Image 1: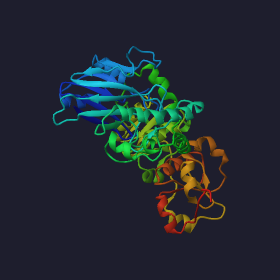
Image 2 (image 1 turned 180 degrees about the vertical axis):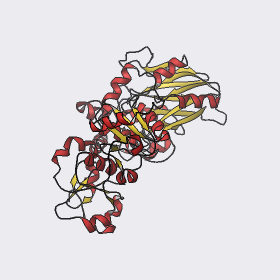
Image 3 (image 1 turned 60 degrees about the vertical axis):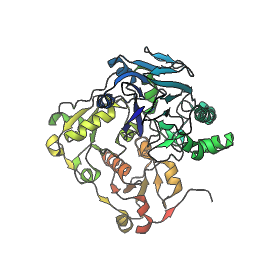
Image 4 (image 1 turned 90 degrees about the vertical axis):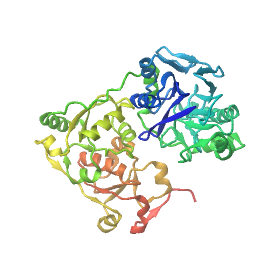
Length: 459
C-alpha cells in the first residue's frame, strides 16, 4: 500500500490517495479535486472509491464530484442525512479496494456520525502494511474539537471522543501509520496538537493525552477548557456538504474595468487587496481592505471569518495571487469572486484616490504613543489573557466589524502576534475613517522594546 498526502496548508488539512499500485481510495478530498487527480495520474492508478470520514465543517468536500467524474463509489456514513446518492457505510462492514481491506470504525466525537478507516494490505512489500485514516478523531497529540455541532452536544461529544480514540486504537496495530485529516493548523483541532510530520498508533497511545489520561471526566474538563473561537463560515460548510457541492470554478475572471472598480469602492463593496501589508499601508485605493495573500498565511480562514458571508467580493492583485486566492476561497464556498488584475492599484482604478497610514514597530509605539491613544490587540481572547500590553483593549479580529463603534475616537495602535491580523485590522479601521497606526512587529519582541506587559491569568 502506498499513501500519497495531498496537503492543504492554507486550511491546515490533509487529504489522502491510498492505492495498491492499480486502484485507489481517496479520503476526505478538498473541493479542488485536480490535485488528487494529478496524484492519481502520477501514481498510474484509477480512483475507484472516495470516502468521507465526516461531513466537514471547515471546507467544502470534493468527494461527490470526484466520485462522479471517475465513476467511483462514494462512501458516506449511512447515518448521515444527505441529499445525494452515496454508498452508505456501516461501521464494522469492511470492503475491498483492490487487494486492500478497508474497515470503517465508528468514532463519534468531532461529529455524531464520524468514521475512521483502518486500511490493511495483506501483501505490502516495501509499502505500508496498515494505515488509519482518522479524520477529526485521533490527531497528532490531540483530537478534533467537539463544539461544532451544538453547544448542548459539546460535552457529550467530548465523552464520545474519549471512547472513540480508544476504540480506534484497539482496532489497529501499534505500528499502523496514523493519517488524520485535521491537526496541521486547522481550527477543527483542539488542545496542544503536535507539529510532527508523521506518527503511528503506538506513538499516540504512549503520548497523546486523549489516550494517556485514565480519568475520562478529567480529560473532558481539559478538552472543554481549551475550546476557543472558530471561523464563522464553518456554520455554512456542513449544510452545503450535506447537499453535495458542485465543481469549483478556478479560472481567473476577466479583470474589472477601472470605472466599475471605482464605483464599487465608492459604494462600500468589499474590495480585497492581496498585496503584502507593508505595500498596502504605504499606498492603497481608498475603501479597499488588506488581506495579504501568502501560502503560509491564514488568508482563507480570516477572510471567510471576518468579512460578511455571501456579499459581493472583488480581489485586487497580480495574476498569480488572484489565481491562488480564487482556488483557496472556492474551498470554503466563496465562489467566482470578481477581480482587478494588476500590480499597481492606481492603474486599476485611476479615478480613486490613493491613501495610506503609518506603520511602525514596538520602539515606535514606546516613543510616539500619547496618553490619549488606544492600543488595540486583535488576537483571540485566550492569547490576550496569557499576556498583553498594559492597558490595551482586546477586540479579536473576527469581532472587529461588529464592535467598531465600541472603540474610542482616538489614535489606535493595532497589533497582533506577528503582524498579519493587525494588517487586516488596520485596513478595516482606516476604511472606517479611524486614525490608525499598524504595529507591524512580533509580540514576543514587545517587552524587549520597553513595552510594559500584563496578564489576565489568575494569580
